[in-house]
Image 1 (spheres, chains in turn green, red):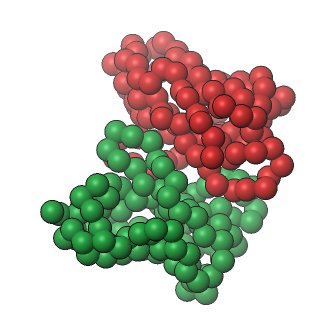
Image 2 (cartoon, chains in turn yellow, blue; image 1 turned 30 degrees about the horizontal axis):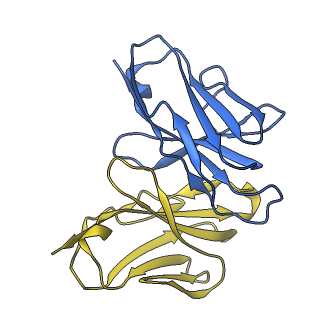
Length: 112
Length: 117
């Protein structure tokens, strides 16, 4: 089992809809969770991070963390074509210092 | 966050040669990392660049192949040695802003796209 699992997609949603991206992980010692957006040919851009169970909202983005079920998700409200990108889930575990483990990424396509 | 620059942004190199990639940050940081992203893949950590001491390499990466320097708190280099076509990847520098471990968020530089022929 991979440490961080994401559906590779593509996930296709119509413009204006809510895009839901999910990530599961295997290490219960994971403490910090990050969502990166990566446009084709560009480097990853940090868009959200969450450390505690529950929801964290930032503009159109909401990160949701459930440590008991070992998943973290990213909701994008009012999806725009400019949100089309690959979204990478990453996590930091207690024993790994600041090292991040990345999932394989989910490709999101927002259709006008 | 921090402003991170990398040089070169891209290069095409012949097999058997070496390339040194530079990473410059606009502020002092303790934590600096080098990642590789192979075509169509996610990110893999190569090593943690430690200021004043040898880098800490992840499994599958060795100093002879990927020597790293970290002369100060704003700069690091990664060398890809004796290159083969399998080394064709994007190489990314990342940092955790600040000095005292107050935060865990990592930010990435623009990357260096390397093609080995």
